[in-house]
Image: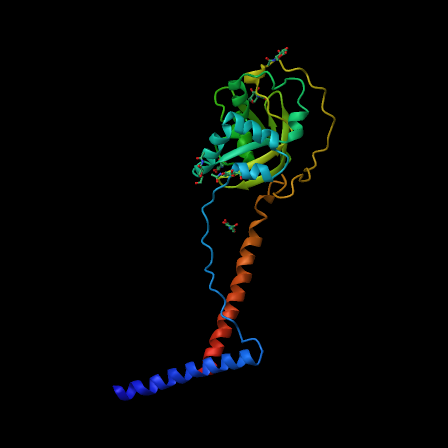
Length: 264
Ligand SMILES: *[C@@H]1O[C@H](CO)[C@@H](O)[C@H](O)[C@H]1NC(C)=O
Ligand SMILES: *[C@@H]1O[C@H](CO)[C@@H](O)[C@H](O)[C@H]1NC(C)=O
Ligand SMILES: *[C@@H]1O[C@H](CO)[C@@H](O)[C@H](O)[C@H]1NC(C)=O
Ligand SMILES: *[C@@H]1O[C@H](CO)[C@@H](O)[C@H](O)[C@H]1NC(C)=O
Ligand SMILES: *[C@@H]1O[C@H](CO)[C@@H](O)[C@H](O)[C@H]1NC(C)=O
Ligand SMILES: *[C@@H]1O[C@H](CO)[C@@H](O)[C@H](O)[C@H]1NC(C)=O
């Protein structure tokens, strides 16, 4: 047994010795060592999907007015709570700042606190709907919102463009801000005004100018347009990144084992 051990120890020792001297030599010779062992950074564990709505609405698009209303009425907590509940998810239609500033006729200024809260809840659906799911909403119309009861929205699909009608407001999804289960956030250019607050005595709107139904260009920097099928374009980059970094890692491992083989 002892006879077996000593040659092994000798081999290991000499290998270590070789390693030490050669690296020392390499350092004095100022040629960089073959591959400095990189600090092993384990692949980051996939974090659970948590979307901070405050963060998202602050960073994306000009949505400050809506966000401020959401905060003052605490409707934000309702939506965030639903977003945390990944079972159903949430869909929120977010009017731009200019949607609020251009709102003249029925003003929000003299709504009661409860009415304002209902109006904001009216902008959310208690379920995650991707753009591809909007066909379902068309069939389900009138669709109940977070405000419940009479507060329903009608959806129509006009050649791929998702139109929303509250009676007072006729608008469309102008871009997708975020659409990953469980949170969907879509930009709209009008505040959604419910008949349940403002009544059904809607002043006739001048016939809308015949606008060609071209899919609108995205206004927001990130996110996808309302093209319908473009909702998952961001995922490939993420997986290809993994492939690239995996390639680098495997090359490093190969190089290291090559060095070891040389010494043994
Ligand atoms: C969400 O983001 C806001 C703004 O950055 C921050 O103040 C808040 O603490 C965040 N909430 C959670 C639960 O992380
Ligand atoms: C949502 O989840 C985050 C992270 O788990 C938590 O900090 C936050 O308090 C939750 N918010 C609500 C309204 O449930
Ligand atoms: C808001 O107040 C104006 C007068 O200040 C009034 O004419 C209007 O009917 C009010 N609107 C609502 C929804 O109460
Ligand atoms: C949409 O409707 C189809 C059938 O019409 C159904 O299979 C699908 O689950 C529905 N999707 C949602 C999100 O409700
Ligand atoms: C929504 O659709 C229903 C049924 O098609 C209709 O009765 C109702 O008037 C519509 N509401 C609005 C606000 O367009
Ligand atoms: C990467 O993409 C996959 C789908 O290809 C998705 O499930 C996952 O959440 C993405 N991860 C990150 C960090 O974006």
